[in-house]
Length: 220
Image (cartoon, rainbow, N blue to C red):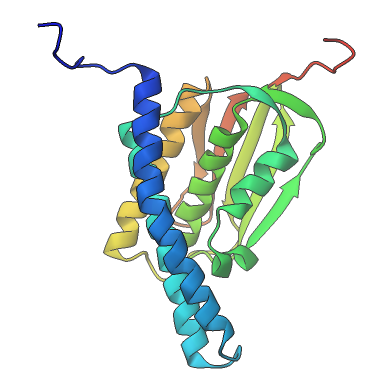
């Protein structure tokens, strides 16, 4: 039966399938987003049609994020530690935030230039997902704080103002998936997700991940 397909394809094959599915879905979403943004620019900032289109863009961004989360859940990529900085990680997390939500996020980075060895993209996705959790729960303002603490990279997301209106049913699913994946990826990097206070009110999520210092070029 040598002509049978293997029941467990090698990781390279799984990564290829995941990338192909993601590209097939994200490309039309990106085109739809670009078209909506172009239409929004045709109207003045006070035109209600512009606000409606920007709201639709946010929903397209959220849909793309949900697709990526579902792919990560089904076919998680392996951790790939590399040299990176806390500033790069925090900027990547903020870049994933929908455009209309970015003004609600404050970013503080301590020791932002210090380089360490960690899976930067995976850690940035953890922080981005926790930002999603806070913003989708109606927080008016959220703080993303990145720092090194006791040899660990720590990214915390804190409600600065109590959440307003609760998330809708659809967005509740988005929040739950984001929380589960953030906790799973933190564990896959040898770390943990910790919660202080209540995440449905004033509270903080914290991702702790071991982050060894990166060797300088002269040392290597």
